Image 1 (cartoon, rainbow, N blue to C red):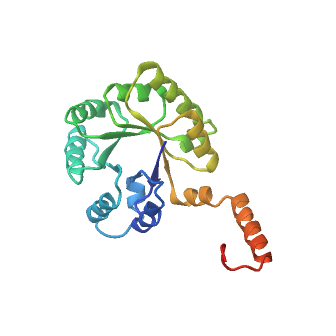
Image 2: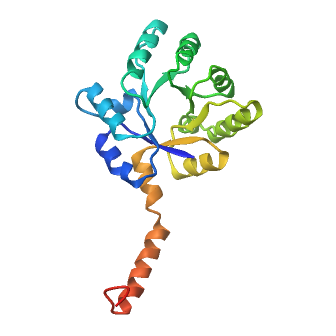
Image 3: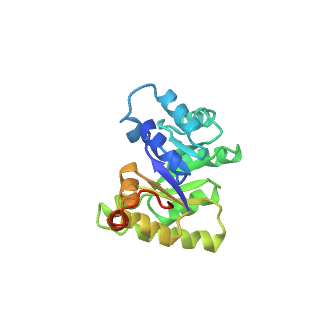
Length: 219
């Protein structure tokens, strides 16, 4: 399973990349709005920092505008994936872009049928939003499980990218369901790394070692 960092903050990306567990980055207009500076420069810096895919979302609304902006975004770097929200009027645009070998991440997927339609177009990633289903008291993980079954049934190549992950349970369930990718906010990744029982175990080992009165492991 690939883990993407869901942020446009360069300092946070710089902090996590050396761990070796981050396979890519996802950004969106809301995340970019939190950053100061030239947006193009920020995105270029992120692309240079990350070896894996970096998703950048279109903000144009008309099909022609989405197409032209997708081409512009794709040209920024070799590891760019263009994010396009699901909409019926964008399907011809997405189809055209995939035929031009432009990597597409279709975002705001909320149903099995939506995922089926864009899988048929050969997009690289499908991004179902788990947390937003939970916000309206529906178990968002059911959608991830359905998408995994769909992919197995029909042999689609599009990768299932679990998005809108709000808590550790969302992440664990995405792993168990067989999602190809999970994109995680840095704050949540902190929680994953800092398990209380792990910290308690380290403290116990340190305490027992100090009782021996030794400084080095091998004297």
